[in-house]
Length: 588
Picture 1: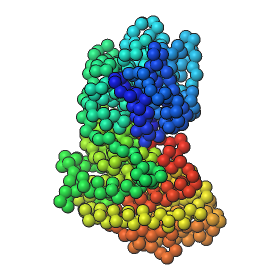
Picture 2: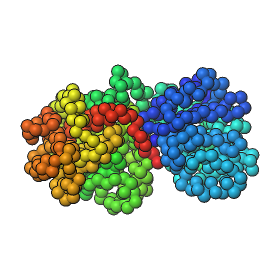
Picture 3: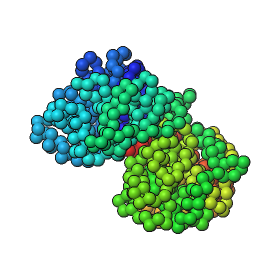
Picture 4: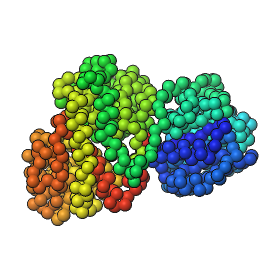
């Protein structure tokens, strides 16, 4: 979601801020801005739009040694220049960028209005600089203003702050939202995640929860309440990852093409000499648990549902919950259940809150993520990485497939039908075959209008749900996923002449009923478009996939539905990399 970049030291701040914001591009955003010192004044430049537009407003040379930047995904207030960050206090004394949500902003806003502060935006964030100014004018101390503001702010926040009276320090507040610092020979730099700082080569630190303080060129001052504290070393060993397109027009297109390499990376990291290799303590914890409870959001939740099928196939009781729903009604907390949290970014807000409940009760759990040293990974009992490489497009593609494959590998490590290196190689071959048939998918586009059903049964039902989500995200059409047997229980009322229905057929279980539902659809004038596995294909099927080992069938179907959604979105000239109203990492 929102991204923060900032620092103090000897660097080209124009390049640092704009490049940093570009590297946070994968989070998704609708506006961007920077703040920096120009003489004794804080200059703010911001736009509603991309970083490229912001760069046109920023002078080619910045004579400053401190600056902050922000990319915003709208939560409070529509996307606009006024609502974009940075926000300034009434007199211009403070400029801030903020990630998170201030839950009591209405109360604070009313109090500040009574003190004659005027608000220009519709954001929750604007209360922060005004509150700082209120306390600073009374105490004469920025640190005291930070302490008092922290006592009043409720919710979550990572805030980077400039004070007009002190151009030699970068101030901060941190509670419930990630804020990392990187100390180098050239200065100290701050970001909401390591990605934009990876190439600096410095030492990383995680600012303590509930802390405030300031950064000098080689100095970190940190307090919790009135108690001095120290930032926690952050053992980040990642390398800078490129988000270059390498000849592709879209990041989503490139990342779908990367799927065979992502599968190979899983094989390289989780198989050794033909055998699956996972932490024995993790496997023991999984084996000893009464049940496995998956938690996820969006595409990752559908990967969790695939994980449920994989574990049940090995005789293990399993279920999946949407993280935001479980958060409201948490259960399975008696210590007999092992939890698996699945998040591409490792920063998903609802999952972080779920994890806090698990950690408070000392319940062991596993995080599956693509992001090393993310918030979820650092605080998990166990973690497994996807090794899929940077994913820039908002819609998850290669990371979704990697989640599905990795959960299948993990389940097979418990016993039963094991997934082998040869099986993964077969999946890679099948993936390459599918990716080479884009033209065949393009022939299906004319059948689609503004509505569709996605039908499946058994292990492919989560993939149908993923297909419906992708068609919404990048195709901007209304798509609903259904178990095929449910068609006759109401949805048939919507079938009329020319209504398209996407159906997935990849296993013998449920195929007869699904084919019967398709006949009912045809009888009413609907247009079934069947994607089938070769073993179960019929002559009229629209797209036939090569056979792969049974445990990996959902993974291959995931690839073709991702590719089809991309082809549809691109054909309609939609911004497939950055769909409207969506962000990559939902951190609020």
